[in-house]
Length: 623
Image (cartoon, rainbow, N blue to C red; front, side, top):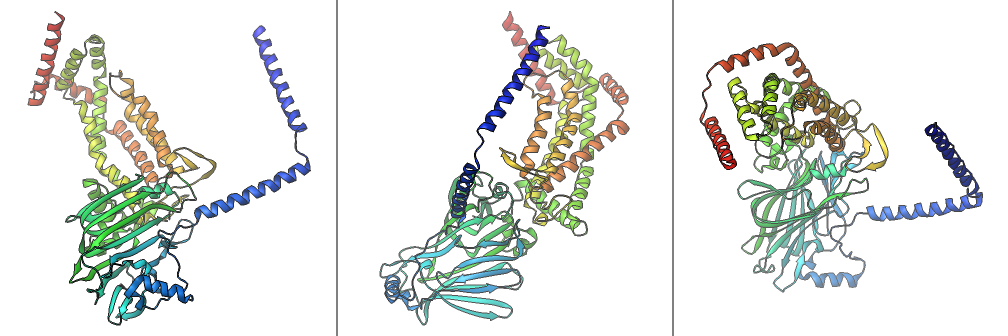
């Protein structure tokens, strides 16, 4: 009675407190004048915040160049005095357009470099044309010293453009002259429907002007422009990759704040921006290069414009006091079908297929197989069909794994008896357990080996979906882009490690893996927990939660694969359990195996002898 009275008093108290709070809010509500003042103040704050955001998102050029006022004769004279003999070139502003069906380049008179590179056939996640170079995010220049000890940077020099045709090819010659027949030339040549641009840097008649005792250095800097919906996900596959030392492929870190390396014998350098790449390749390898990659992404944000900042410094060899370097620019998709066209340069090796055998399976098995399926099936259906075929191909492995689990289940009563009998003697318990397994012809590792055999397949597929250009901006069901995350609900806040949205495919995959793990770990959970072994119940709940969080910002195609894969595996295991395996027959077979004399192999004999010796030493110590 007292307890009931206390509950009623508590409820009355809460009601009174709630009523008092409502009254206080009513009494203290602002007047219309105060509301108007607050509104004005809020508008000022929002205006200030908007201005700050605009300033924060403004593109900062890699290298700020002092603009030359060409109408100021004093400034022009000062420029010519600074550049010395190169003042022969008429200083004129402007750019020249060089384009074909797939690529548009703008080349500036000042610096002679590409200041805009646009993909004609691709747009970003928010329908903006894909730019690899734009608004000063890149800088390409040569640094050299003249015979009169001037240190010049070609980014400061003016070049004279000359556009012509060579058959179907467009050729742009940019010359920084010191005389009519003495110049430094950047020569660009584009071919029809080709992302590769022939690029030659050469000098003529400058052997007496360039100081050959001091190095000529190539400087190439670029800030990778964000193209994807999730900047962290895109940044994970945005890396500086390079071919060096007779075909070795290396990468700078994708996550370190700053990674720097000095390498030798470089064939090409790839500034990869996930699904697009800017690559500089050369016929004559760079003898050495200083490479750096700076990470610009700390957290998920819609306001971040750049992912990485790349830099390369490479000395150029002089031939008879002249510069002569045949190179190539590649501005285009990180697509194996396109990059494979440049086999002599080996540009397809810049795609992150994965390490070792995993990458081999991805590149030569899954990539062409999916390309074949998607050539006549919708892209999402092609993923489902590929998943079904992969799981059917692995079904014998699944069968062996489940057969091992069934055998362990049959032996469970005997193992439990041993555990109880020798609960105070771990060594003896282990010996007797191994004897039972050996007599029954059962190996505890037989369930693990099939799982390990599947790892190369799983990892290869894990790398396939984030790197498959074929999935980019291809929709399926509610997913607008199979290469990015799907969204069924936008959150008004951000959950750490999860994001500001809810993706449905990871939820489905998490539910499927939960039921799959219930089937595969249920028997292990029923067995007595061995010391030092992982808690299977904890793992059963942790794995789906980790998948839910980890894959929320991953490619929806990958989550779709895991959902279908686990669903199929569940059906296969149910079929094996209910229609293929017979536990009574397994039990009878185990009993027959126990009657047969078992011959120990060398490893088993050695393990038994070691355990017996350890047991003897333990007993001797007790005495």
